[in-house]
Length: 447
Ligand SMILES: Cc1cc2nc3c(=O)[nH]c(=O)nc-3n(C[C@H](O)[C@H](O)[C@H](O)COP(=O)(O)OP(=O)(O)OC[C@H]3O[C@@H](n4cnc5c(N)ncnc54)[C@H](O)[C@@H]3O)c2cc1C
Image (cartoon, rainbow, N blue to C red; front, side, top):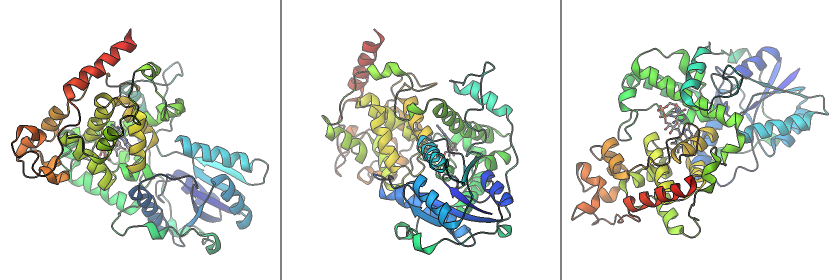
């Protein structure tokens, strides 16, 4: 019996429940990845990061990976027929797009002899399982976390890679994806495990102190690997102890699980308001203020911490969590654009893009999410800069035009006679005025 193993956001061989099941229950396995035909509009960096992840997966397989492009429901059905496979096995997807592709494939296979098996998830606890005593979902993080903890850590799933009868890809339909892979992009399961090992050895014990500081290398940078499924959270949690840093790290992993759970119960919130009242808030139309949106996207707002963060995003595909909150607050409460405008830009650029964490990270900051930071708590970009980048190093790293300013002075270039000498722009808006404007608009929907 031949089975197809359909890789999605689970691009790893170890601790992959569905793959271990497939290997143990199928004499021969054809590993496949499908590039959906509709994945357009992403930054070249994000495209390249996906390709690098797929390439690393292919290289980790003894005979390589079958890579095809198209609508998964169509191409996988055809491939099953062509290869004589009687089963397609995959990790169950919980993001709206992945789930849609899996539903469509199930429908396409309904009248055929080929069965689709969806097993496991990319979460420690499968979305939908953590519930209140009355069987309803949790809407607040802390009680979710307490119940989530009760599920306990579980043993990772191991795979004897050499013991599997892998099938070689069919060269006549192989998609050439290698062209877009930059040699400098590090990706894949091996890299993820090494990133985790180094973080655990070198930085996790200071994590609770340093995680909020964009100027320090204080976080794990595992979001990319988790988003691509190059590592499973089970692997991380199984090795976590109870030091303060490890406790906080466990809580952050649980935020990812909480948002996946929230999106599972409320799939529309990937691009709609979780708290519907905020649909009524008066927002500005970005088409009427294109120069403001462009300044935000290109790191030219004149607020150094905002601009450093946006340049970090565009140049590297990653942004520090504190910085994500600062730029999101700025877009929604200083520029008065809807959160979806920023979320879409993040989707195009973040190499760790995750629909649940992104949409709900934005909604948390915009005051309209579950457990959200209240709308009236408007981040002051100057105070945020001085507090979380106290010596100004983060700003100087990303904004060459401000490197001549020393220490925390870099957060307020307008106070320095030489502040604008290298072409850095003056602020495009006045923060205190726009804060009042935002709070005024909030009053309108409270009435
Ligand atoms: C507006 C906004 C958008 C975001 N978009 C994404 C996104 O698209 N993809 C994404 O993975 N994260 C997103 N986050 C969450 C967070 O910023 C990143 O997970 C984190 O910065 C990744 O860096 P790290 O791996 O070094 O994190 P660490 O601090 O080392 O945390 C470890 C892991 O815990 C999870 N995690 C940490 N913080 C959060 C959080 N606040 N919410 C959910 N999970 C978290 C991530 O999987 C992360 O890799 C967003 C946050 C905000 C405020």
